[in-house]
Amino acid sequence: MGNRSSSSKGTSMVKYVESDGEWMELMEQSKEKLVVVDFTASWCGPCRMIAPHFESMSAEYASNAIFVKVDVDAMDKLAQKCGIRAMPTFQFYKNGEKVDEFSGADIATLKEKVSALV
Image 1: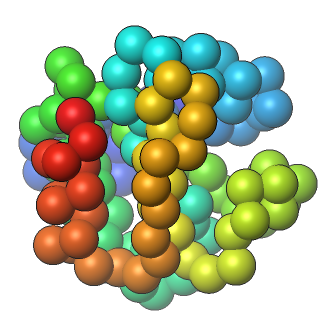
Image 2: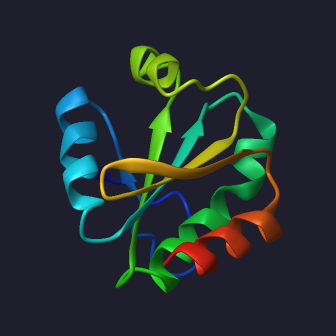
């Protein structure tokens, strides 16, 4: 799982899922912490708009949650398996199970759901 930072503000703790094995590892980690998944695409304008907020939240909640991005073009089978139909879609996992989801670049909703679930 790679750590890439595309933000010059603060520290990004966002990890990038690049294989099915990494996804399975995350589901194991969700037994200990909330896993917040951003299903995104490089060509998606709203995805780029919310990205800096997602990255800053990854640092803010680093002790309680794991923030990851999944590129739907690179991981199309995983995106399909997770039922992704729009980008960005955020899914929240605890104990290996999806506990919540929403689509759209709504910063307030993202913050609200993360703070409620951690």
